[in-house]
Length: 78
Image (cartoon, rainbow, N blue to C red; front, side, top):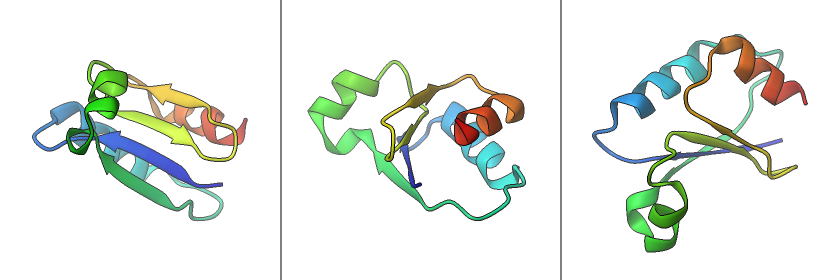
């Protein structure tokens, strides 16, 4: 499994989500690809009001902010 982390610069909520992701203990590391939505009009249209968003590349499932550690772990285990 890999994660895509949809974010943008100067986003305080994105910083909170990144910090949670970094400090959540996981059984094994999960690769995370940070994607700045400002680089694409299509991504801004899709995620502009939802960021930060985590997306699993294996299932396509998405987790929108706000989420806590328990929700993050459940999302990763699903």
